[in-house]
Length: 127
Image 1: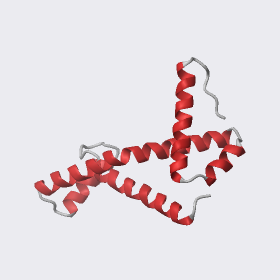
Image 2: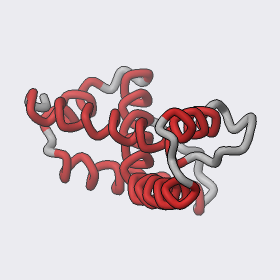
Image 3: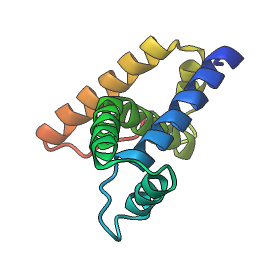
């Protein structure tokens, strides 16, 4: 099981990425609400055009650098959900004791295994 320190760090990272994604989105109308939030904050903070451009660039770079973390979290959630649905208690229990680095390696192993199954034409299985 993850320690409280690791859980808090993960929650903080997810919250930070969520906040960054609000600012990183384009300010085009109808951009799933994110653009409107950026426009609102720009207006509320009375940012100059130069500041708007700089902030947009900063947040877009942060969003891009956070993409691998978001992808890893997505894969981890999918793997855990698959294990839960398959009632694979061994995988669930083993996963809980792994460090974040080990969990990443586990996810890479599962991804490689699934890719090999797909390329060989075999049906994917949730083990």
